[in-house]
Image (cartoon, rainbow, N blue to C red; front, side, top):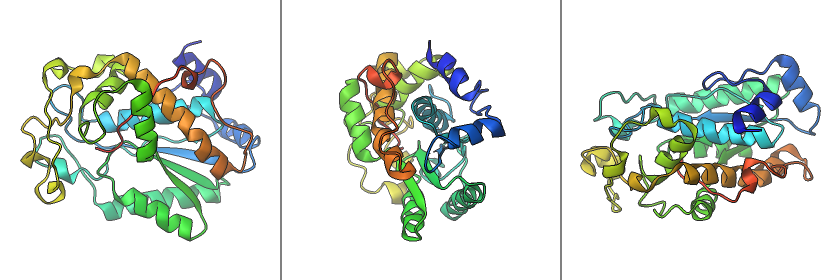
Length: 277
């Protein structure tokens, strides 16, 4: 059974980026855990060089979220598709909202979920510029609410190593080996020609927040996309799904539940990385 068939069996068909669950699906899945966990992919709409789509971060976040939903009894939500991409404003097509707006959107979604009986929320972040998401989780946790941000840098690093990604997380900053690999695995039809010859390194970016990306790259690329492969993308997602097990146990209270079943994607020893930019 391939990945799409697994998703259809477990959660109903996925139309584009939108889960096709019914209310009964959500109710049935929630009945099997002590505390239900929702998964919210948070992406962006920003330049990713001449070969990756503006929606790349959303596609990556959704790929991670779907991999998680295939392995754990979670409530998969549709993605937030526009976020804080202000550092990419110099490139046509990039659209941003303020950090205050993104903070409010996440808070409203979490409040709404709790009213419907879903007590825990995991933000699967696909864009490193969404710094405010860390504050949202900190504040929610301090109020006694159950929320997490995934993947952590350590999850990305473990995935990178396990997948055989050659670029460090510092070097693989934007439209590089990791993002290219994930899309080669999940949406190869969306890549344009050029990733094979677009490598560009700019490891010293200490004034990025002041100057924006255009001070460090003309193409919008910082990384080594030429090293990307579908095999690495598959391995990255599998590693992240495995890493999510500890988050699921913590938030759901189901210490014995979680972890991809034998034969699932998370078993074939692979990693991932990028949720930074």
